[in-house]
Length: 498
Image (tube, rainbow, N blue to C red; front, side, top):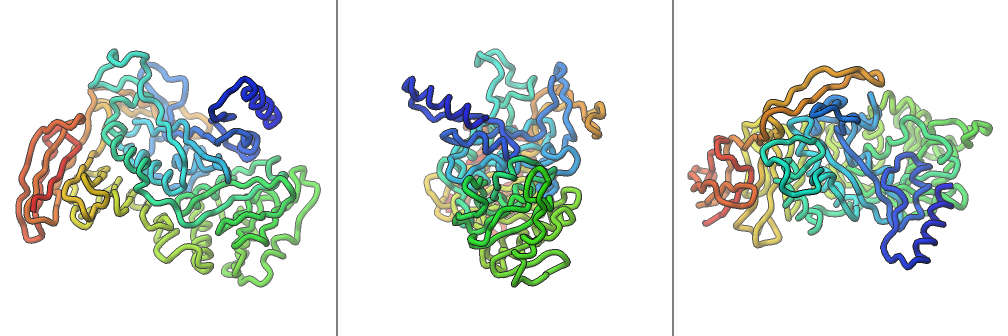
């Protein structure tokens, strides 16, 4: 019904002379919903993290949690309330279709938790890794006028015009995305659906999106002419709703099924397909078979458990490395999700997210004793949580640059915000967050270390005016700048003079 409607509507609009891309919907989730909107010129989806429960009561917002974004493990997507406990990447990825441009047409991580800057850095980097085509951050301003809202208060959680986590990182975000400073993945995974799969939706259907798009470019493929996959991805993954897809022509196939049946009406069992796929493989643990082409799970429900997909990730990592699909040091490594390019590392167990490329660097989360941003620059932060980004000035490569723009911020928000127990709904407790006080940003405290003989640091306000200038102090490793957090600036211009 969806496809007939949208095909007819597109024909009507084109008959009127419309010459712009036409999108069918920007809020889609389940497999049938995604397939039903594939007649648009591109795919879109809306994704939010820590979105408040609507309607909002005054300046009080109800939210599940709120949890600290950087410490939320993406491999536990379906625990608790499910999709509200995952990342923007996992949420968006269910709507990406092979052969179609993709835009994340609405997204945000609202400032209900005082440390929420990670989400923006993470979404931008993974958009580059997965080769997404556009991003529209919601919402710059809830007012129709530019000058009728306060600069020193956040009165509406949906505003981002004065959210430091957005505004002060905007230059980095735009530079990374538009200039392609984070590499596109080298490896590609297709998640494959049969027509029968579109008629049912298991609780854990989004399991592939909690692992693959963090490592490699991931797309969904819908089979229209039979149940045999003919694509060219490095890995083809059975969506696993029903026991019907044929992956024998794939370079490498991942087989499992949430149901023993071939059809959504549960009339015809498919008892031999997984056993057939497992021929010639080794049983690497009870019920899991690995061969040169296939990874087969006899009972995926047992592997997935209650929605903690780390076991699935470990087995997938083992298979991909034995196949030679991803190099050592990438994939699922000691609890970290490492992209196949080695540029992106998400370490949820230690609340850390890192990007290091020849063109840019960022760190967000719980700082180590010494956080290395480049071969020349490191930070010894005393902040409990910190987000830092680094861009070269005047040169493409960090290694060639003598000037840099550095952004560093800890927690942000309203300084008297309260968090109180809210009502229990859907079997889980909610938190009532009331914005109070004045806008604040926690500045960097600690030492900025530079491998140079002489360097100068300018602390800037949000529009680039110099608040203070400092000369580096010499030590045996180069020079350092001692920052006590008292200058109200989170952006810095670093100049290496010698």
